[in-house]
Every structure is written in structure tokens, then in C-alpha cells.
Length: 316
Image 1: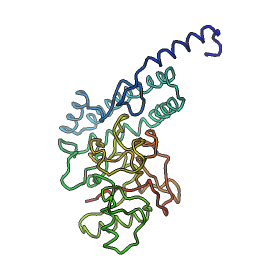
Image 2: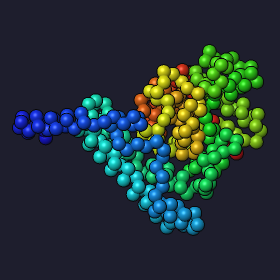
Image 3: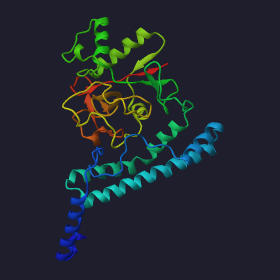
Image 4: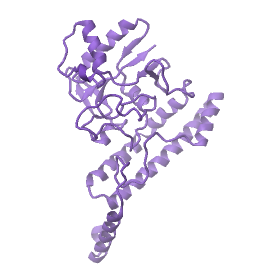
């Protein structure tokens, strides 16, 4: 314990750590941790061993091959946890702000607690029969949610002002103040959960051959996948909401965009009797709150909010 060390030793430790921190350079591309030298803009590429396990399962989907793939996913996951732990120790030595240490501690604790669930999510994605080259490309604005039911796909972007205005015009529903046709490509906000459901029902009726609804929290997470720590998205970047395509270079696991930051998104998953889970963070959220695995945020379903929008899934 530091409190048991002689004063001269404590002074030396603090002096060395302060000098080390002073010599560290800020990395402009580091969004989450400003001194980080490892930049993660995209989801990590699969290593060759994992690729071979996936190929083996696709060629022969036996329980043995599935278990071998699961074991490899676990190995990969534990390597990431080890890196996060190392980053936590580095922050304890160098961070000037305790909040950065606390943020990383939350991430490490959450990864340890959620290990089984995350491995299962990854396994379900890797063993999905739709996993093939081009799966993150779409011709009709919807992308397969790997790991979810085979007929579930998710919209490329959140519902925009322009799209919601068509719904209002077709149904005669009263508009809300936030519908700005001059910002047609911005996500619509101030939409209650019930209004979002009504929009989905309208889409379903108009389509006639498919059902549209809000995603469950699990489906949303499957579609989003890992949030790269230094990815570009609207969290602390702007003083308000941006167009849904402003950060189109940042792709989710499914290929959808704008899943982190900009606006929270309604899901159909209940937190309490009167609240629904929202996911992805918003322009005024911390990057930590934008993480895919953040599972504490919710909103009363009868209200609308100026930083909450929604995205639809299609069941076909």
C-alpha cells in the first residue's frame, strides 16, 4: 500500500509518474483516451485461426466445430480483457482526471461480468448462415442482423425528419415541433415510444409483405457489435444533432451507420413497467455511455425527448 511507504519513496514515485505523464503526447485520433498510441477506428479484423474455425463450422456445422469456435472466441475475448486491464493500470499511473480511470474500471468490470453473454453473441453471429462476403452491403436500405432470427434486418439509419414527415402526411397525425423539413436528413426526435410504434405499423401496412417494428435491445446490440473506442461519431463532437450520414465511414457490425452517438434509439425492451431501453448514446453523451453494452439507460414510453430517435427492423 502506498500509505505505508516512506515519504521520500512516495515523492520519487509521484515525481517519476508526473514526468512520464508530462512527456506523453496527445494523439489527435484518440477519441476515448487522449494519450493512447493504439487507435481503433474500425472493428478488429479476424485473425487467421478464428477464420479457419468459422470456415470449418460453415463446411461442417457439428457441435464439435461449434465448441472449437466458441473456445477460440473466448481466447480472443480474454486477450481483449487483458489489454483493457493493462490500459487501466496505465491510466492509474498517468491520468490527470480520475474520471478516465473510473470509465476504464467500469469497462473492465463490465467485460468480466458480461463475458459469457458477449461470447454467445459473437458465436451466434459467426455461426449465422448469412455470414458471407458482402453481408454488410445492401440494395434496399436494410441489413441482416447476424445472430438474430434469419428474417430480421435493420435499417441503415435512424428514421429521419423527411421519412417521418411522409408518415404524418399520410396518416394526418399531428406533427411535433421538431419536424424540420429543412433538415430532412436529420434523425427525427421528440418522438415517443408509442409514436415510433405507430410509424412502424404504418410501414407494415404500406409494405404489405413485411412487418416493421422497433428492435429489441438484444437485436440492437447484435446489429451494432463492438464499438471501436476511437470511432468517429457524434458524441462531444458537435453542439447538437447532425445528419444521419455525417459519420457514414463508421460502420456497425451489420453495416448500418449512426448507431453510436447523435441520438439515443428506442428499443422494445422494457426496463421497468413504464420505461423502455434506449441505446447508442447521443450528441451530448459521454463516449462511455455510447457503448453497445451500456444497459442502464431508459425513458418513459409516453414522452418524447430532444435527444432520442428510433430505428426500425424489418421481419420478412
